[in-house]
Image (cartoon, rainbow, N blue to C red; front, top):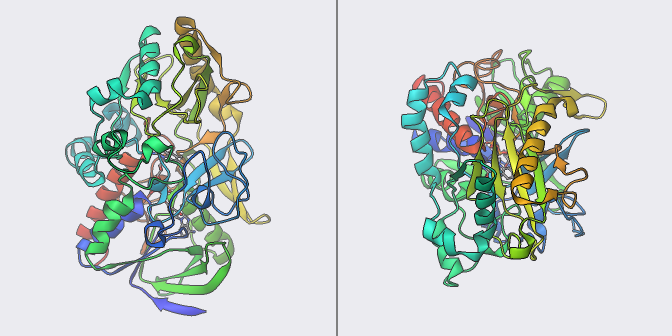
Length: 491
Ligand code: FAD
């Protein structure tokens, strides 16, 4: 196997990886970033939209893997969206240079300060709300839809109907910021530029309009000249050497997933930013196969961020439902977090199916009362997740309460069209935790039992943050890497 020397290696190019890369490169460090997915920008292969799933739609699968309506057969390709299936929960993740930012809805939500303090009592909330969150908003190019455009645009009928109905039922709504460039969307609407959000592009990638990480943090990091991104490089496991350096075992593949080369990267400093599930897989597998030392808390304190999907049918059928044309970018939310009995936040989600299905889709985010645990199954060589219906009892109660109240005020039924019994308890977009900050790591993400190994991604957040998580993941990564650099960890 070829051994490649690299002083600093980062695994994964999502939020945590991109922030770490930029700040280290700015500090003059040479960084190698290993990403198992494709560099889509470099490949020049266009992303496909929801109505015609193609190459970008699924990670090495024979069939598309959208949460609903998968009738499309595919030739396996290293697509942007992957789904990890466990007994009681399916977890969707992004693959490619930019990680989850390629496939997500771009909702850039800052957590409620009171909940942030509850989840991270040890952090200086003042500093986060006055420095890290604003910094992250600027770097990620967060913006807000113009109310006039929203009011008239036929592609946002689903949001207007959703908000009207929520108000009718006595719920409070909120405008949700996004990284999609709304000025670009206005031009799309006027047919001045190619369409993306208005052409059902989102979970298989956006060809235009969305400020994913390849257009923000990673672009800036590359401009320093200090970053090398190696795509289609999948890390199998890592090994701690006697001199406290690391050997990273890598398989380079082609776009059909076939092996091109085995490589070993030898590094002094290693940052794991492979996303919650990716980082846990690397740590637990490396412990099983190479005896990598692990703190006992690794894998514990895992949660689905309270993700719980539900839907309603026959939403205003007489007035034309939620609209045949829908933008893929959500801009509305219902904020019921302060209700002591039923605290939840829900996104008023688009369902762009090319026809009016008179159905409303909601992704609820709840508290996580009972945490799960991730372990490694040495026989099947895969992750195991201790998570079942007992973990989502309260989430289901909240969803029932929400749908009942909406239906009572507005008419409609539970959506059996979307989900078996009207509820999608097994759909998770926000896996968090398992390497909790300050428990399995020091206060800045350096793993206990290690001197040169760091975790900087969603796994630092203990299973819940109350809103869509990437703004928080990015802010925590900024905080950690700033302090690690200041503390001469990378000197
Ligand atoms: P990720 O962004 O997951 O990045 C990890 C990267 O590491 C990936 O590119 C992966 O390919 C790579 N990797 C993993 N294992 C290996 C390995 N062994 N070797 C090499 N590379 C590896 N959040 C929001 O805040 N707002 C939203 O609107 C929103 N919508 C979403 C919609 C969908 C469909 C999905 C799936 C997620 C959504 N999320 C949203 C969640 C958000 O995208 C994630 O929380 C976020 O991307 C996690 O960031 P991260 O840095 O932890 O890792």
